[in-house]
Length: 560
Image 1: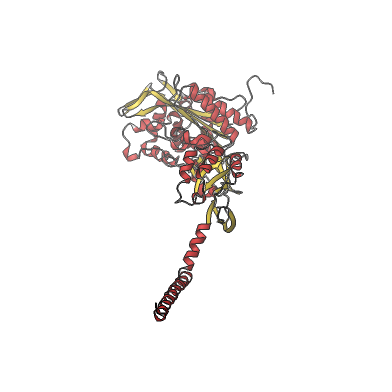
Image 2 (image 1 turned 90 degrees about the vertical axis):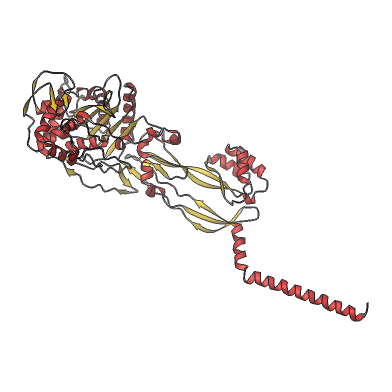
């Protein structure tokens, strides 16, 4: 090969090297100058990880400071599948420590498209600590609260439930979600080649939710639930509700439902048992509704307690024949005796004197057909037939609590108004949010104080010598009313299914509590005075002693 040819080849090779170097240099400059920021971000993203920091949920307390719903400290275990090398080893270790299926864990770790997965939410902190000691690459741990209910079934339908993510699902846990939940935070960490955190580059602290204090007293609530459950069991009933209400301010001291459930077992509880039937479910009240009819006639001046009527055994109203619960001859009764003996014929007679328009106005004035305003989700307004839809027989059914549907809370609030001198306070469950006391709107007057006094005297006679003698409490004055109603069906009224109820006020002289007991479909007995009144007596007696209310009536045979 000639020297000239050799030089030409050397120059060509040098040119190739120069071009290659220039291209490489240009590429490097382009990557660094033009794409450098995007690749830098990509690299950082591969090393960074944002971990959520759940906020602690506010505690729900009863009026005495006893917790009904609290946060229990747990440990949540998570993983970054992209940084795990020996997935089988890690899966076996995680499964053994946390009691999980190792195969299922392995399948989770095999999905490398995700940089963050939960392996166990709210695990036992001791078990998680033992796993953490193994220092497994790609496995992380964060503290997290688990919602627990230390009182178990006490006020379960009222308090409700918060799920795995600590979001309220039912009851007050749901309706006060924004208050209880707080604000979650986060941490962005930088990890080394082995997936271990080496620095926190960004942090947003979580903000704990606010606490809520209820008007409910866990002792009064637990007692009401126990007695209600015993009563439902005794009479083989479908269910029941009980309410204890302070008539002076509308505070709900207890709201019980049977059957109940353990809040800690919420996911497996029967949905029917989770419903707060005291405010959501309707029933025909029967004779307890006679309070509305009699109060309207007294307030309008149509009758006085001493007004007397000659009452036939039955009364015809349009196509209906109405009779009393027990057969009787033609009898002359005063208005007071009509209420004491719970005469259907007498009550309808008074209602006819009052008139449909005026009775309908009073039903509305008492708040039936509208919600009570209680601070609980899902309250029913009841079912009230508009006046323009009344038939000829409606004036014979509504006055005695048939053809109208109410909630237990509506009936308790009505009797609380009589106990409070004719002024109905708005029933409520929330006493404080955080440290601030909740403002409750002032109640409004339903009937005059004079009318409420007359009704209280008449209701006392119901317990002394009428249908409610089983509600009497030694040493205390008691006022109240029994109720018994056939349950409606698609073809009229059932002859085998009833609702038995009693609503009472104690002490009658200076009321501190209104107690309602409603038993759905009792068997063996159907009357409110037999089924519900004894339960009222036991609940009210406990409440009076627990609240340290002094006796206001001498016990027969006692010395003074």
